[in-house]
Length: 275
Image 1 (cartoon, rainbow, N blue to C red):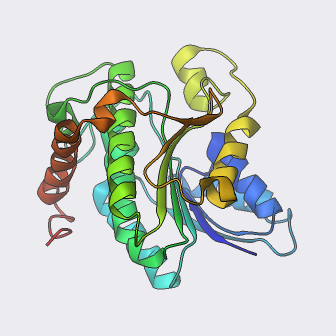
Image 2 (cartoon, one colour; image 1 turned 90 degrees about the vertical axis):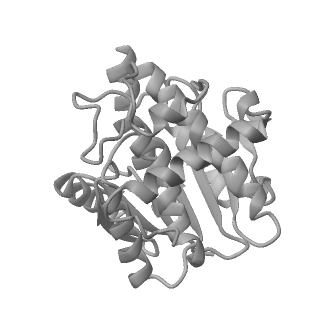
């Protein structure tokens, strides 16, 4: 059965490989990217893979929360239903670590943007829907102040904190929707796969990207994940695992959620989102 699946960050790395697999399987894939030319090129590459698979493209810079909001609105205008959201887009290293909204770009793209996009698109997902959030084995205790854009962090610190924050809200939202909404699960696709991010960060070729793409496709489609509400799947150990201890700490989770929602309330263009 054909599924309608949104993949953010689909122009390279694991996102591209996941899109290639899903289009080849005949699914209707909504590709997101930041660069219109790269996105057009990817759509052309994938268009001949399947007679039944469909492809659409959406451009947005996820470091700009107003564009995240517009992306969600555009998708909702064109689709009454989504089956799966794969929040794959991520940033590790960048020359400019500050967004136009005054946030750390790693927190903006890796944590806040997928939260906002998911919340905006929840009405399109029924109880059989799924949200797959790309986490990481690299996770570190979250500073709510850093999440709000205060202070400076190294690339590794910001990335690890942003991925734990993503895992924390994934668990909280997934459990809160357990009886009525889609499955929301955080997935570590496997450490040091050969994405551009890994090459830039560590200077190594990395492992086969298809390993990460395969687990994302499984998370999106297989019965194995059908009841994985709020869980964390660690593909390094190839099983569902306990998340970082902070993701189980109610007080710390509430601090992170409050920080995320405060950011959304304060940023121009999305201030009315929770009103």
